[in-house]
Amino acid sequence: MGLPKCLNFLILAWSLYVICNKKNGVEGLHKIYPQLQSISAPSVGTLHQTGYHFQPPRNWINAPMYYKGLYHLFYQYNPKGSVWGNIVWGHSVSRDLINWKVLEPALYPDKPFDRYGVWSGSATVVPGRGPIILYTGVIDERSNEVQCYAVPANASDPFLTKWVKPDDYNPIAIIEQGVNGSAFRDPTTAWWIDGHWKMLVGAKKKHRGEAYLYNSKDFVNWVRAKHPIHSAPNTGMWECPDLYPVSLRSKKGLDTSIVGNSVKHVLKNSLDVTRYDYYTVGTYLWKKDKYIPDNTSEDGWGGLRYDYGNFYASKSFFDPSKNRRIIWGWANESDSTEDDVKKGWAGIQGIPRSVWLDPSGRQLVQWPVEELNNLRKKEVQTSNQILQKGDYFEVKGITAAQADVEVTFSFSSLNKAEPFDPSWVNAQDLCAQKGSKIQGGVGPFGLLTLASKRLEEFTPVFFRIFKAPNKHVILMCSDASSSSLANELYKPSFAGFVDVNLANKKLSLRSLIDHSVVESFGAGGRTNILSRVYPTLAVDNHAHLFVFNNGTEKITVKSLKAWSMRSANIN
Image (cartoon, rainbow, N blue to C red; front, side, top):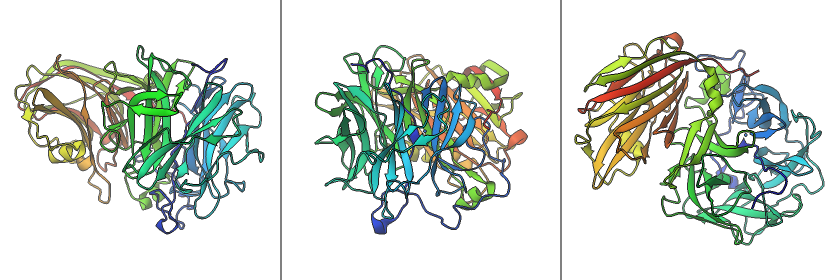
């Protein structure tokens, strides 16, 4: 059942970043640095600043809507410093999701119902009324939270430069009995079904993560359903929930209000405890206000993730101009707070990704939006290069610090695959144990990104294949442990398992390399990993890109294409 005579859009104003204050019972993991949050660097450091991943010109960031020909990006932003604090809703617009014009902030904490914080939310285009923002307001020093709304001062203005928070009806959802006031946030895009608008709000009850469901006939009077649409034990606070349909028949995206036999639904939650985004594929029983996940993946910490790296607080939106659903997530810094203050900025957005349901029906597939290809310039390519154990070659002729690489590997046999220990359930631990430097059977093979000339620094992105009873297990890693000679950095061995058929004995990899970001898509986007790294030698023109094999099974680089990338315009 679709939304009558209108399209339901999302504005992604994402990732609620909450103060960590156990004394007051506040949920969240953000440290507060009062002495630093309003310090602005005298100049912006550009050493690790990205060229084509979105970030404001300076300071701390942390959502999109398509309206009247423009994409709107709203984001949690500190206009005064490069650590968390002084949060407003930053606002930028684009015609292509890549090049952006920065506007004045859309929302400030200036009302009694949000004077202590204007935190994350979403928006919906309501027929006859235009876009309406739903967001979380913080009402007191104990970080008790309510849900609020804002409307554009002039809905005919495609730039939506001014927003108004009506005193009538605000807040639209308050703390009720049984609701943890400091764990009650991030309203979703609303959808229309059976004469009602519906939205979700993330919550926590003791150890259970929950998504509360609210109903409204007029978009301002909201009533909480008797039960959460879904919950799961031992998952902690569910931040930035997201519920949307995916087609069983096509890669095309669907309006948020679509239901029926030809769709499945995805429920995503950002788990505050782990700082990762998990999702399930399942069935939305709209007549019962319930979501039931399929039994094809775990409903919790060990379940499917959008991304197995530094990627959090994502939301999706339906883009009616190209009939696609797009996911966009936030990546924080992995250096120190002091480093952020010195360089004058912190936080980036990942590249927006088109998303659809894999033909297996068990998982999603993600791929960078096609507009990114417009930044490609000089191209190099090679094919049918054979790599024996210990071999590697350099991809020359491109700017290796700012590049886009697509490569397909093949192998003639899987007989040399190492045996898989069933206790290896954590991919990240396995990657740390068996990194790119440790010889294997089939793999490790892949790319050495942001590498110094003599390999004192490099970030390997690679595959390793194991043999388990009746199947093969594919590990994909993006290992930052050798990424920098600098100390006091978080350098994890990010990893995920890849669910793909190896009948054709091929694996593909795409890596977007952007100074301090390596954003990789394995097996056509079935397993994805974003890493933040800070090399000291492999910077700018001193960065190199290599292809390698450290397994006893020879690997053929069937095809490789790499491009230097232009910088996006963000001004």
